[in-house]
Image (cartoon, rainbow, N blue to C red; front, side, top):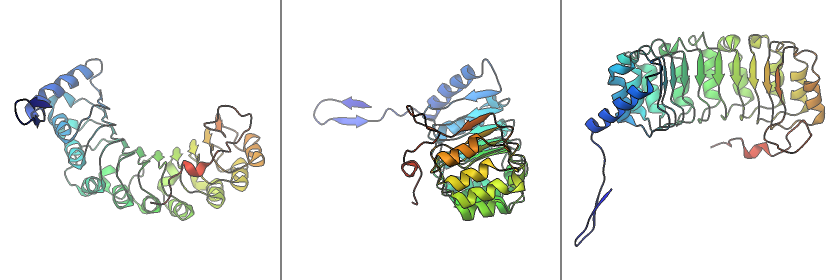
Length: 311
């Protein structure tokens, strides 16, 4: 910002031109790709739609497989530039968490006939401005058939998204699904269990939702989670009955990691999991999170303060 003195003060913004932005960003890209031409990390650099357009047009990115643009100011227009860029056709991992992407941008992507990123295997859209209206359409779109990992946590999504996951004929190669801090309840769990997507999941994150004992008991007994290795249920509404169901589950015997901190179960529920005879492959069991000084197995803090309420 500049100030012109003499009489009335006058302010003007020192906004660089598109040409100036291009020169600067191309140099940044060149530096970032020096050690490994397949990984481009540009997180936290205040990049917006202009910068997304510059990246999409750059000849330097043709070999990039991992593109990290998290924690920026990428908008719907920027998302379109990236997904339709022929220069980015090799990208397999696209990180766009903590940006300004809305339903409009994702709906356009879901319906697009010109998407160039056909090899995309991992997509992170956490902490944007998304709702069920767009994410449900995305999971039903053939444009994302090759995805193996999808993170849409920390958005305003709930039962509409998991209903779409239960109905879709696409995303049949999905192995990792992150739905943290959403509005999914028992009805949503029932919808999710109707489909085929859940059957191939190896990692599932349902932390900070609205899951109660009845939902946990369903998930602990369904044969559809046989492939699951990592399960995150922290910050829900799980009591002793739900904890006991998990501790006695035979269908979840493949689990290697189980996270249950910040729930409502007491010592009895915690003991049933800690002394499980059926979860024989567990390597990591987290029953307590965020407590520095307590010997108890369970975190007795107030999880309702950490879980989103209905908007």
